[in-house]
Image (cartoon, rainbow, N blue to C red):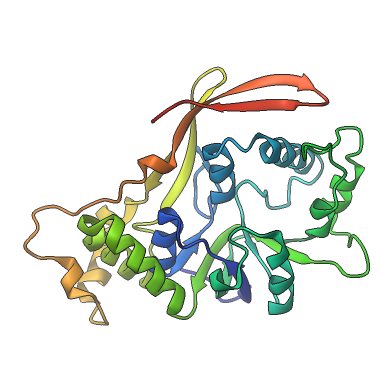
Length: 296
């Protein structure tokens, strides 16, 4: 998809390039949020949400669903945490976020150019960091007034940690993280490097071809499946195919492997799951519980 320069801005994000799906997007060079395109027919979700489901992180799922319920009811114009991408607009704020742990490590920090498809949402992450929670980490259901203040964009205190939620696309600057992403993908999916190279060229040419997105589907009441789908809509787009044919810039000829009869695909199945959602309705346990089934 062509990106407009009108509302673009520079930003920072922590990119977990040891996750193969993230690595795929990073090496493509353009990250795409779940709802950046027209996906009115389905339910694409963010990598954050996909990770919560995969790891059965019920405490965090409980918290994020409560935060999302308030957004949907009171602030529907705001970008959802469950579909958007997260950025910091200054390096200092990104460095402060390293205290969150996990992949919020300086070795994963990237600089990007962000192209929103709708107005971004700017919120103070400190509201969530200091949220009133039970000993098990779940948000206290009787003390959720702060969630509205979070979505209103109010600062928590005199030293807010602003983060920007975006639906759109982001170009990854620099080569160090992209090289690390490529090294992982080369080891994990050696047969898919030809598709990866075409996906990289497509991103360079303004197409989402080769972009992978997490999707939720519901098979029956309470039963869901999380799986990754790769965008191949432009594979039949004559205008894009013409631009790809005429492209004479740098390309990895070794990975294009002209002797192969078919293109390879990465195996993202281990990062999806089938799961059930049970309504508990308990102030102590929260409204929902996710139970992941073995295998997919």
